[in-house]
Image (cartoon, rainbow, N blue to C red; front, top):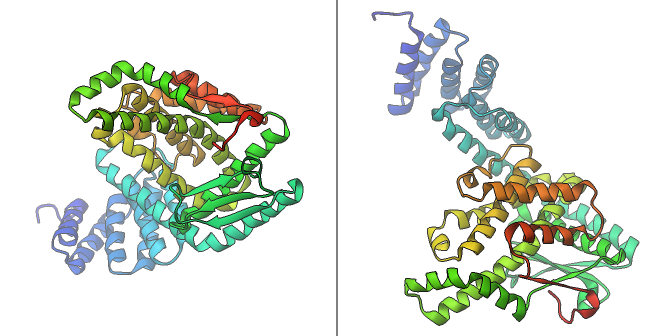
Length: 405
């Protein structure tokens, strides 16, 4: 009443009716008046469009959101809400493009906007999952074509076998390791959105190993009693501190053995995963959505180590820090691979291992500049050097390897 031309008074009244009283009719009227007074205010445009969208009037909401974006490209709310409109109208591709334009724009410094980015990334993942699931049958067809091309070139067929007993989502069994005339990729069909990427990952694992095999550079990564005893000597002081927690000695001893084995496996797989997933991204662009969903799940598993106080407190420092550093490198890798749409590395910035994660990623980047068959083994050694894990494993020539690793 005192200032009838104050557009924001109408905006705030509209928000009160919209968000608190859930009176969409009154909110619509107040926002409409605010628009008349300030037709180019991005906050008013976004709020007015929000009411239209809430009432299911997406055709009216969309141009209002677009006007708000044109007025202030740094304001995240209209882009996020426009993407919601597009997804509800069935325009999934348009929604993904809108979300990408939001997530690839430098984030607002206003802390009140941070929840919008969180929700935008959740929606982006969900839409990617929908697309990956819809494309799954075609993705498998294309992968089978790639397997057939490999067979024609090498003479080794690749068989796909579903195996619900697997402890991992997928695994590759090499023909010459298992002494049979074909390779096998076994998988668990638990997530159709991720499955194509997981199969492609194992296919590239076979291709990578084949290249080293044909170049005479093949090595087998092994752990044994000698390497475990060395690791236990390195960890002795840290382990003795942990035994003071009162845990049963025999149980704790088995637990430490499992941690040593787990870290040794990660030391081999982490650098190879960077090589393989970069190849998958380049060679199979039709799998980008499946790869995005799959790698999201993989990094989420890795993040549990960072966010679990029990794991941190009950693990030797050497093992815990090496695990966090490799998980950080993987998170940085995904952020780079998808050009900043994700922000998976952010939780690691205060972990104490962020710089080490960066060094690991830099070592991978350096290796990939002039990558040759067999360089993956050199990269494993480089990771071990940076993480002080030399002698936690051994390389053996294929002829001296008596059992599959």
